Structures are given as structure tokens and as C-alpha cells.
Length: 415
Ligand code: JFZ
Image: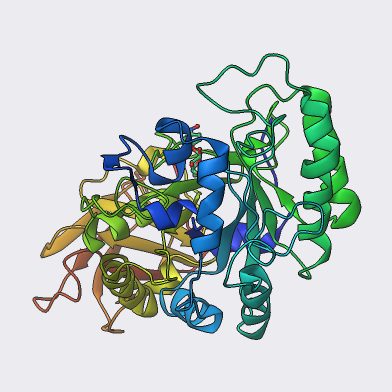
């Protein structure tokens, strides 16, 4: 069955900001002289840090550089349409003022302020959707929460579920206004009944709040892929690729394996051309500063979107049989076909296109293009573009075609 969020904003948004931020950001991937072998937010699990030790991090958490407005303004400048932040990750620590667990940023840290509340106010001001990551099954702080790579036998998961999980879900859905979605994760041993219970509970509080793919038991309203993983063919339902800029979600000092802006832009175009959304992560540090490398990459992507955003936001994938045009990807809207050119070329010829062209131009500069548009009675329809020497962008130069017909599909020959 196709996944459908029924939320137009999600289908049109295409690009969002993921924020992994919590106590693990203080450790930055290192504990007692050891570097954690995998993603930084898993350090407690990977290095077997006892709850009593890990807990102490709270007394050191004082992210005085955090500025919610600055974050939201950056996300806007980067061209992102929604923000998904960790309200509680697997470590069990709430980044908001929870009333049902003292293990939260207001009650347990010297900082003493609710970062989620600040972010919610800024998102409202700048009209950007706020969404929450919430780890529903794993909770390494609660004795009855699941913990991957550990023995979970004998745990009373139901107690954790009733006393922490559901009450906290209620809190995050009632304390911060309208929430775009809850991004559940790693369902572990959660039963179909429990997934259903969470789903119904979310909808009973905020009917328009989307429930993410990893709620478990295939109940999510869109598909979430693995990190940076893109399905090979367009997937016709709603889907999203969560992705990192290096090889970790939470801040990790030793990870310098940054993608380039070119990698990111091309990945985005590929995802959008197949009908998906791109949720791209930053991992702020213990003070609330965003790594400079992330900022630089995302600024460049934002520049691309300022000039070429029409070819991304609100677009749809086109039929799969055109995917094999070399060095080109396509996105579409009614009356528009966007051709993304990943290589410089003098001419581009596309065959078997039934649509008639009104005009074509380079999206970034507005420069009109000459097109030879043929329609013969033998069905040899084609478009041939002449492209200028001055090339707007080596990463992706976008041709905007305004088509006469509403649906800019590449039509097969009519028999
Ligand atoms: C999960 C988390 O464990 C991780 O810490 C981070 O929050 C990430 C966004 O989500 O990790 C996963 C879960 C599932 C897959 C990949 C990473 N998956 O299905 O490929």
C-alpha cells in the first residue's frame, strides 16, 4: 500500500533540517580517552557508560551559545522548510521541560532553559514547520526502556510505556503548538498494538501531525529510508531520506569526513527527482554552536536553492522511463519540466516527447534558450536545446521548460 501523509506541506517541502542535539554532544564521541566506533549519539550504548555516570553529563550541559532565532534564520537561508529536532533521543534525556521525568534540560542542567520552547517560538515567527524526533522504544535511562545490543529480558516495557513514553508524547504535542510530525525511531520489540496505540494517541491530540516511518509495524504514514539511501526507482508514496553531512548525527570531534556541497546538491536533486524529501542533519556541539563545516556546506546549497528553488519545492517526480538520459535529472510541476544538467553541454536532445514548448530558459539567469521542437506524423517528437557558453552552475544548471500541455510527461509513442 502506498504511504500517504495527506499533508500538502510535506509533499511540497522537499528539504528539511534534522538536528541531533543532547547530552552526547558534550562527549563529542569521546569518553575516558576512548573514541566511540560509530555514531556519536550512541556513545552511552557503545562504550557501556553506566546510567549513573552518563547522567552526570546533565550537570555540565550549559549551551549558552544556543540562539533559536539564529538557528531558524539559518534554516530559512539554507532553503529548508521544516526542522526536526531530537526532543528525546535513545539516551532518555528530554531537551524540553518534561513534567513526568526530571531528566530534562530545565530541571537537570545549569542552563535551565527549554530549548524546544525557544525553537517553537522562532519557528512560528519565521513560518517554518517544527517536528520532533522522539525515541519511543529505546530509552537507556529508564530501567524498563529497550536498549539495543543489551539484554532486554525481564523488563517491564509497559510500565515505561505508560509512565514515560505516552505522557512525554502528550507533552510534546500539547506544549509547543502545532507540530508537523513526530519522527519515531528504532521500534525494537514494540508490538503492533503498541505502535497502533501511539499512532492513535498522536492523532487524538493533533490529527494533522504526521507519524513517521519508524513507528514500527509498518504503521508510519511515509517511508523513511536508511541514512543517505535512495530508492532506485521513484516510489510513488511519500518518503524521506534522513542524511548526515559527515558520518555521525550527534556532534563528533574526530569525524571530518564531510560531504561537499556538490554531493549534497546532487543527492537532493536525485531524491527530489524520484519523489522524496531530504532531511539533512546538523549536530551542534555542547555550547550550541553548529560546526563551521556544516554551515559552509549548507550556505552553498542555500545559494543554489535561492536561484533554482522553483525546480525543487512543490515539484513531483516524472515517469520512470526517462531516467536514462545521461547527466540529466528531471523534476516537474503542472506546465513545467525542469531539466537538471550535471555536465556542461552545447546541445541537449530529448526524444519521444509529446509536449509542445511555450518557452525554455535557464532558471538561474532567466536567459532564454533556443529550442528546436519537432513533431512529425511518424511520431518522431523531439526537443533540441542550444545551450550557452556562459554556464551558471557546474554542480547543476537547470533548464526550465514551460510546456503547452499541463502534464509535462515524456509520453510514449501512441500506436
Ligand atoms: C537511528 C538512530 O539510532 C540514530 O541515532 C539516528 O537518530 C538516526 C537518524 O536514526 O538510526 C538508524 C535507524 C534505522 C536505520 C538507520 C539508522 N535504517 O533503517 O537504515
